[in-house]
Length: 330
Image (cartoon, rainbow, N blue to C red; front, top):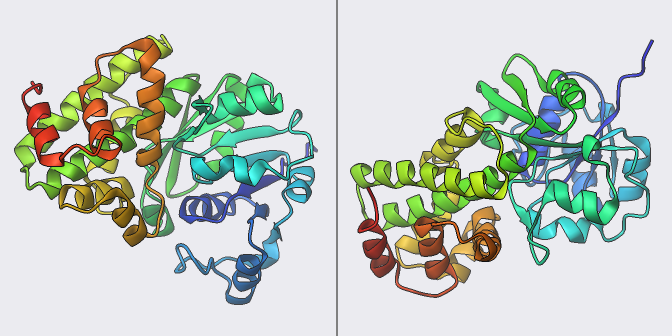
């Protein structure tokens, strides 16, 4: 009988916790967390002390370690769910080879400095074969997964068989899965939807109404489509849930930290003050700069991205920048 692959969750945040909950519907897991004290508190209280603390875990079925090499050696499938700005920090102590591992990115961001998608980063820096790289995407707030609200995930992979295997392992009574081969499209879309959610939040903070928000989001999906078609020309349906659906939930949901961050900026908070008050990472802040720099080479028409960049990094008044942007909307 073929051995069931051992899954490891890499990260200790809310999305990592939600993914661990999903994975444990099927079997035992390994779980890497950087801080030993977080692991000890988790074992003591049977829940993540810092994130989604209402979710109870059978910790007897979890092999915890703060040693990334120990987790990698014991596991076959590694699901990375750390904020993209901290990925390199987590990997700094990695010595174990990843070549024969299935590496899965559940990270909705880009690796800063290199400005690479997470899967491409693992391929170039850690020599992970492209067929061993998978991506988890789709409209999926960790808080709703914790409450077992029906969630749809899309698994992207260069190797359809491996993507299908992971999709089957993640499917349960509250998670439905599907498979596509659009790895880079899913990754870029998951970054861009955070940028556009910040824009939606800024407009909300400035008291623009629902009418304008609808126009903004409809322009955003067109902007996303233009970018994806240039950077990775592939047959894809931009109206599918992993693209349009993820954009909608991130732009409108009360659970969206990127929308919340944008709302604070629109209300007059500085970037630093908004970040400190949230106490959570808004991936779109970092993604805005990365995509803006990537687009310097492609020169895709992206007025919403440019407006968010000008507000966050150019320190231009949100009221002035959004007024200019509104004149470009159709």
